[in-house]
Amino acid sequence: MPKFSKIHPVSHRAENMFALVADIEQYPQFVPMCQKLVIRSRREKGDRERILADMSVAYKFISESFTSQVTLNRSKLEIEVEYVDGPFRYLENKWHFVELDHNTCEIRFSIDYEFKSKMLGRLLGGMFELVFSRFTAAFEKRADEIYGNAGV
Image (cartoon, rainbow, N blue to C red; front, side):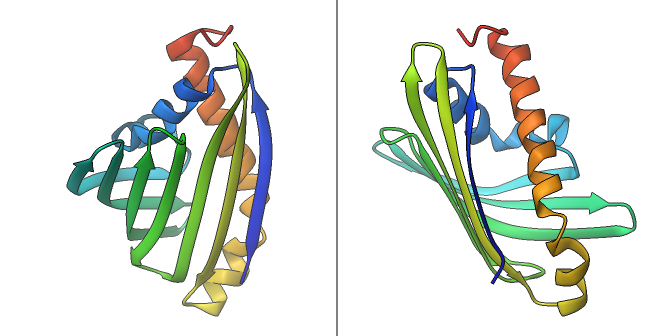
């Protein structure tokens, strides 16, 4: 039911931003609200990789865990996340990284989700834009730390 999409330019190369977002094991170190991430399985086939992962998130008094399948498509610089189990009725999100020039790219992000609990949906649903802006800032800060401010 709730859908959100955003196109966000960043001063980093598309393949660097793809690599940063694809490195999900590192999320607890820098992604706001991500408390823990455990990889259940990983399969590679050509330029695609499928990861089954459990993520635990916490915000104030709310703590939830969910399982998702993450598909990394290196040749297209795309990441798809499909919901497997947890507090959602469904969740699907996509990342696409588009090179604009040597040091700039666009991150195209979309998410479509619905919580199983209507109360949880009302409580957290309206906060998604704020949460996304925090995520965006965290990924950009991490990219600056790893790749430098110029994105190279």
